[in-house]
Image 1: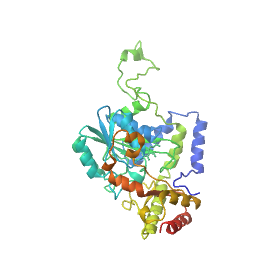
Image 2: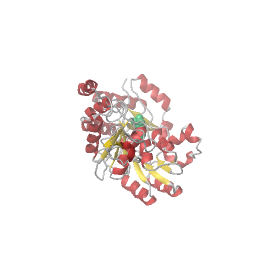
Image 3: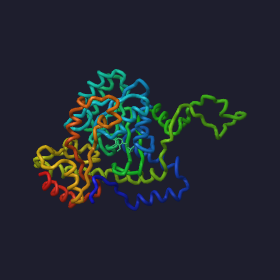
Image 4: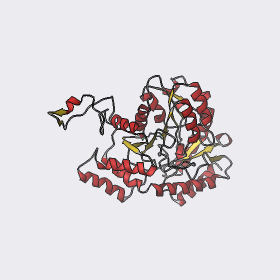
Length: 390
Ligand SMILES: Cc1ncc(COP(=O)(O)O)c(C=O)c1O
C-alpha cells in the first residue's frame, strides 16, 4: 500500500535516539535546547520554544497573543480543527474567513470582511495549507490596521519560504509561527511542535506557559524574600506566577527531530520535484486538476491535493477512494471544513458564509506525496488516475 504521507527514518535517526537513551537525560536537557536553537537558525527567528505538539503550541501562542474571554481569533475553515480550537482553549471565540479558491489559503478579502465584522479580533491564524505560504503581506496589512496580531499555523510549512523573501518561521509578518513534527509532516519527532518568535517578552511568556506558569530565566520574583536564606539563594525555590500547562517535549523526540532537520532541505527538494511532476502529469486531465499550482518553489509540499469534478465522473469520492485502495494507493481528504464539525455547527455558524471552502471540500482529494515515493510509484499513481478519472 502506498500511503498518502509517510515519514523517512534512517540509521542516523535511530542512533540519535539511542544516544539520548544512553545519556541519562530524558527530558529538559541539552537536546531540546539545541533543537530550539537549530530551528531558530534555520528559519531565521530570534527565539524558538519546543512543545509537545503544534496543538499545544497554538494554545500557548493564543494565550501569549492575549486571546482570552471576549476576544476573537480568525482562522481559515480549511484546516485541521486544532487551528480553531486554540481560540476556544484560550477562552475566546473563533470566526472563519473563507479561502481563496486559487490557493486554498485564507482569502485576504474575506479576512478584511471578517475583521470589519469583528472589532474585538485579537489574533489572526493564517494556515499555510499543504505548505503553500499565505499572502502574508496582505494579511499583515489588514491585521495591523485592525490591531490584531498574527500567529502563523505552519504545521505544514517547515522548509517553505515567502515569495517576498525569508523562510516561513522567521516571523517577518507575524508575532509567532507554530510548526508540527507529527510523522506525516516535513520532519518527524513522533509528536512535537515548535513556536518561533522575535519578541523577547512573548518568548519568556511561552517558556513559562509551557511549564506550569513557573518562572524561567531571570524572571522577576514576586516574593523575593522567599528566595533566599540569610542572603544565600534557596536552590529549590521557584514561583508559579500564572496558570500554565505541561506541554514539554522529551530529549528523545528532539534528538530524532534534530537528526531529521539535517535532511530537511533534501526532503523538501524531493517533495518539490514530485509535486512538479504531478502538476505536469495532471495538466491535461479533463476531470481533475491540482488544487494549488502556484508557489511551487516556495511551498513546504506537505501534501498534494487534487480537485476532482465528481459531477462529471461516474464515480463519487467514496467509490474513487475504494478503487484506489484496491490498487494499493492511499488517499485522504484535507480537510472537512471546520465550521461543518458538529461542535462548531452548535456555535451557530452559517455555512453559506464559506462557499469557496464548501466547493473545495466537495472536490478535494490528497494523493501520495512523501520523500520515499519513487518515480515508478508516482508513474503508477498517475496511470491509475488516468484510468479512473481521466
Ligand atoms: C494545519 C494544522 N494545524 C495544527 C495541527 C496540529 O498539529 P499536532 O498534531 O502537532 O498537534 C495540524 C495537524 O495535523 C495541522 O494539520
